[in-house]
Image (cartoon, rainbow, N blue to C red; front, top):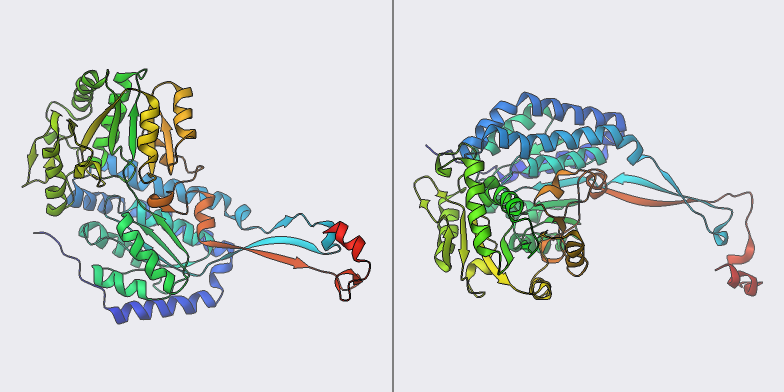
Length: 462
């Protein structure tokens, strides 16, 4: 029997938000020692609740324990460790250079928490994409209301129980529900909204936030191109692309969405892709413990329909009862087809042939800026493609892996999002850098005051 998430009562949500505002205004979160303690509590909770979280991920997504730990829990644990180690340095005021015209003042920049945060997460990586931003909120000194996805009810319920057992709700709380709850939350005033989801929903979040002039971090998606050039090592390219496209059954915001492949390498790539899938998942991927299912019947219907929009070069099997879709390569795909104009978010990979590199650069630049761009071929050619295009992040001769380094920014550009996080950038996302000028009262130089005597000298200093 499928679990259903019940909506949190709207009045209860308002009371939680009010309590969190009062708690923040008590200045309890300003103490760095307090923040470190909360991060350590989250780290302990993550370890204590590992088994129920993994079990819930299996029930909702057929995600194996290994993949759950690798792509969800370990990423959050690494983020927590990084923040505990560096929060003292990140939060420390730092001097700013004082120009001669401002002497004898002293200038510094102090970091302050934005305040009450709303973090809204999607269903595809429901642990990582909810708790990773939370690490930044705790580190920066904010309170937080967490809104998980109702499409993964088992995971959402376990996270709610974990957070309730770990934190007071006046500090961090989970609220549950569908679009009605989302609408109610977005109508409320927060100091920052951190949203991960589709570009369409991102626009609605931004529109709602604009009414209260609330800053937003939007981690969105889009159609991330993957280029396989003439000189690419096809065996390695196929293996890494097959891994990236079958990870979470392609339900990854930075999964390769479509393949731009040199027309001389298509047949060879299809053969090596098939071999790679067998090496990764066995002779029949349907029996693989590591192959995730589509999250819902609606998602299954949408993604399976894409298979009919081209010629199947590999794969193509589906099973609606299990929401199973075999990794599928498509050729002869019209550029006007839905599969080339909608974010696929599933294990279907259309292949678009090209002859000259300039063709693919023009093709990419004519479309919305993607969250990721991947290139397989000579490094110098990959750097040239990156220089002449724009994307949230990129890999040369790899896919997905730029998200694994917490020392690098992760975020979109244009249609694929705004703002970035991971590591110090997560701390910065929930913080405000405040300029502070301190001026002595022992000296009061007259040059800035009306009627501006000796202005010729002052002008030279400006």
